[in-house]
Image (cartoon, rainbow, N blue to C red; front, side, top):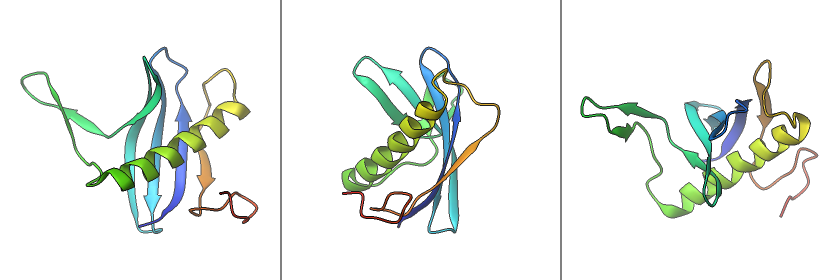
Length: 111
């Protein structure tokens, strides 16, 4: 499964830095992922819902560590790129970053 598009919407808040929507294989999208500032830096949170007891449950999540790392690295890279364009941390509308795994936006190998 390859990431084909990442949309970043910067929030500019203390802990909630951005929302992300990720499209896989031009066929499936996951919305409302969150880029959150923690004590050890930014990290990616999966979309969740609040349960009646006040806890939160992820609605989707990676099955293995390899895919989790792939997803988080790509979303955080897109977040940093968007933040570089908008240092105040807030955008008026969503920015779309098209991704092809392993390449930069010129089509060259990014590794």
